[in-house]
Image (cartoon, rainbow, N blue to C red; front, side):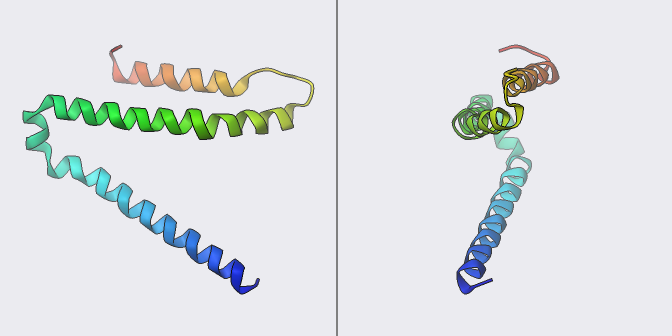
Length: 102
């Protein structure tokens, strides 16, 4: 491995550390600010809507097209849309676990 490869590995490790740190902060923040969030339900609902939009945007723009491309490479002539079926199951599971339909 050359120095360029070591540089890329170091960057990936650094980025992974930043992602873990920001995820931990995001997980602890609602616990720390619980009283303020319970007093302002609109703020909490807005935060949920924003995070749902981020997940939806990432899945639609990045993950799903890559999964469809990989599925097409693996399936060959059989063209059954497994990826979209799993997306549908994930959305339905989320709605069922939430216990309400908005």
